[in-house]
Image (cartoon, rainbow, N blue to C red; front, side, top):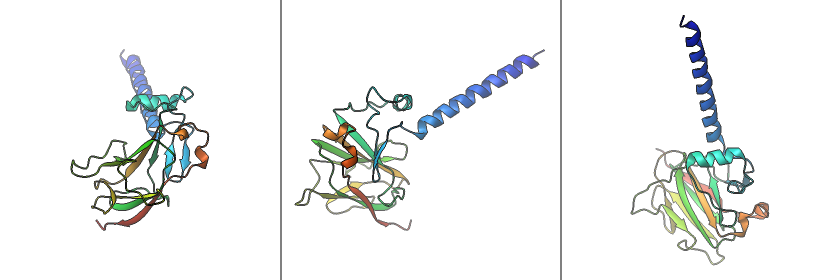
Amino acid sequence: MFRIPLLVALALAVAFGAGIASSVSALKATVGFGAIALGPWVAFPEAQTENTDPYAKAHRARAGKLLYGGAEGLQFTAAIDSNGQKLSSDCTYDIDGITPPARFWTLYATHANDQPMKTGAELPAATNAWTVLRKPDSSFVIHVSPVAQPGNWLATRRVGAFKLVLTLLDTPTAGSSGLIDLTMPKIVRTGCTDA
């Protein structure tokens, strides 16, 4: 008597469960289409425009993020170094070079799940265009490390894999035209602990 309704309920539970699980995994897998990769740095210039794809819209809504408009800025992320190895918080990296033209830029580290890394009030958790020390040719070297470094230092915590987020604000590169000709700073691993 209850066999048919029980089988229908079981089939619906499996279908809804599989559908929800596949949707969540698809949203975690990608920010969307149209990625631009410049060395280890990846940006999605179409993610904040009206031409964005449905996956990018859903990813943005799920994360609760407000992205910059096309003329406001562009956010680059890096999960690997310039040699293609995954960024590890047990290692020290040098971010060496210059950024594309921008009125202002910021750089900070996040956990692998894109949550900003909290390092403590006394440690430099972020740097920007106004505070970075530059060489005479306007290039810079920023040391990313869990151990204090001389010069420009971006502190990390030993949490395993992490990402770097470089946000360019009020930049002509926010339009996707011309992104291919840009030069981004290199991310070079300089050493790791034996922990």
